[in-house]
Image (tube, rainbow, N blue to C red; front, side):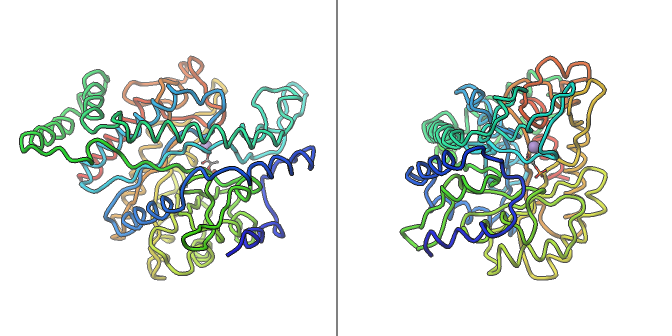
Length: 443
Ligand code: PEP
Ligand code: MN
């Protein structure tokens, strides 16, 4: 393979691309990006593909989560640390309950661009370009802020690099020690209003930890954590500029993140995004909404995973709590009948968004939970593996989704509504979800 092989997407329709005002400025930003070092190593992408192969076989579980949209100003040490901490806490609970390894993948270090339902936004009679994520423009509703600026693509790279650097430091430098993460979970159970419900599970984990301690086990695996970065591959110029030929194998890798996914709005079979994804060797995710037909799923498999390479392809199902039980079985059945074994993951967020009476875009915790339940039921009934969850969350105490053990009401939403795009589960709602999914595993 040569770098020319990645360019095939350019002849196809690419949905959701920004209208850059100045091609010269874009060209110069892309030339800079092409000269930058990779953010991840191709060998790490292969390792993740191996982990995901275990998920596909039913021998591991995938936990993928983070912001809907990362922002440059929101990318502080505290925000990164709290997100990572929340994901690690969830992972411990799930590991214990499922008794299989949990593959931990952040929607982090690259989640800076957003597809939008409309290219423009109108407020009080003023129409401006929609916010497309910090990689493209700014959220503030002014003409200057909403003007796409290709220099932002470079800032995306540098922000992603800083995030990855801190995440790597935390996950290998002692912060992620299992005993520490377990202690945080004990705090959550002791302090959360819904904590009582989780006491038994937390006590069991505590017993297991004490037993291992008494046996004198102190493996290296307790002290470090394997953590991967993922984002939606939306702005193809950026992903293209970060594609490299792997010197070990000659294959192409998008080294902007370990795993990338193609969103519901850009997964057209004859479109540029799927073409781009078909050329890189990274593990690939594809979002599947409620209107996906089994034929669509099979065609995606043929295009993205023609060799049926375990761990290569992850289907991220986001149908909505009311539809998953009706619409998912045919997909899972036909895919299995065709001999394919993708990773099946539930994104219980994007099919459950609505506008609250307060005007905020929100999601009900109970709907989120119910979609995961439905997803598990479908797989249980068909004898396939409910491979994991993909969630929008933050480690901070925001008020963006309603419900949860420490209940957020519609009237609370304005208090700390900070997302740049979709509503995220806050720290305690995320931990609630982990404990409740853990209970599903044990039933
Ligand atoms: C997202 O993951 O933030 C997103 C836009 O999802 P989807 O493509 O499933 O709508
Ligand atoms: Mn989102």
